Amino acid sequence: MNYAVALPDRGTFDAWRDAARRAISHGIAPDHIDWTGGGLFDAMPLPETPGAHEVRVPKRFLSLARAAVWHSAPERFALLYQALWRFDRGEGDPLSPAGALGRRLQLMVRAVGRDIHKMHAFVRFRELPPDGPRRRFAAWFEPEHNTLEPGSTFFVNRFADMDWLIATPRLTARFHAGRLSFDPGGMKPDLPEDASEALWATYFANIFNPARIKLDAMRSEMPKKYWKNLPETRLIPAMLTDAEARVRRMQEAGASAPRPGAAPVSTRYREAMPRPVEQPETLDQARRAALHCRRCTLCEAATQTVWGEGSADAPVMIVGEQPGDHEDLAGRPFVGPAGQLLRGVMADAGLDGAQVWMTNAVKHFKFTSRGKRRLHQNPTRDEIRHCRWWLGLELAFVRPQVTLALGASAAFALTDDFRPMQGRRGTVQTGLHGGPVHISWHPAYILRLADAGRQQLARRQLAEDLARAVAMAERRR
Picture 1 (cartoon, rainbow, N blue to C red):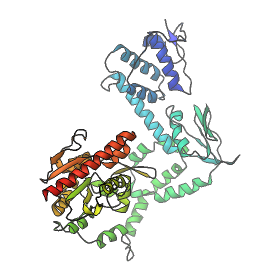
Picture 2 (cartoon, rainbow, N blue to C red):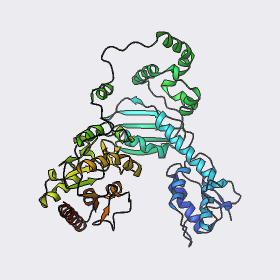
Picture 3 (cartoon, one colour):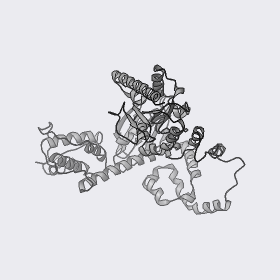
Picture 4 (tube, rainbow, N blue to C red):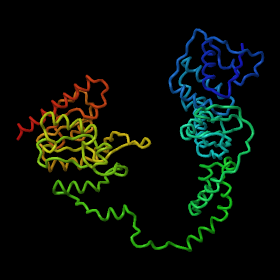
């Protein structure tokens, strides 16, 4: 028996998944289904209710299918059902790029991803007359695949404070009063001229550098099929024609002499800073040398080097992982939320921060940006190894009797042992410098514990480890 399935233009993935589940639950083989909606002789619709068999597939198949269904190839649904059938029958890995089916599906996913990227880059809105308190915009775009629906989320998030419309030959997306909807597509609408396009064209023409033009690279990033709907591309032919003449004029003009005092601020700042000695002989020389540290790339994004502080002859050195956002801005260790917890535990034990040396295994803040927020990232082993030079200088000049390592990164920096903290907390190991290293929880770990009971226990254990480290240091004096 043959079956025919017609899928809608909107909600395509959910519709295909529902139809595929019903088909495979009844054991309908791939060659008995026409996913284009008709064509097989004497075809019937799929059963409306599921059969007894339930299929289970890995998450990576669903992830691939969510992307591949937006491809324009008519056979995409049939190929996905073939892969589903093979998963259900245990016939190898149908998504492997070594096989023809897997390779074809993966190429479809890549093509869809590129098409969505191009839509985000090349949609050009024009402003429409307002009909309410919100500004209105419209755009025409001609995607290669059916990517308007999955690609619209980007515009919803970016232009949530205005109403807009994106029309394509197949589908139209409308965002009105904070609600996204879809209508059938059609012909290109008659959009009004937009005054901002002239400003954009002027900017585009002025940033054009004829000496750096690479036509193949330009056409790769901005395929010519999109040019007709981009206002700036009208200027490209004339700019390319004049490119060689503009290069000659630039060469003849030569480089102009900078005005006095025009050196970049960063250059003048580096020149004004005292140059560090190559082999520091004091703790202060080591601190000044660390301000120039370029041993890894973390210095490029961080605000400044965060050096240790406290007593230069402290019997106990406390070593954390790395500065956080607060420490990076203040230039001092342990001043953020985790540092406040640590200093609170120390105060409860009657220990003043000035009586110990407090520092970090890594001297620069490693983070990833999320809008205006800077989110902490753990340093890698290589980054920790690069920073051992500075930690070694602190150990050599302070000469603590005992070092308290807070967290796995600090323990690794001091012992070269990267085992998990579970089972190591409360133990003492011999450090690379030859002295005892007492291992405890990092206060940031304690703050992340959601259970109040576990958080109180971890805080109590940190206090016990701190007291043991102090007592051990007194015995070793």
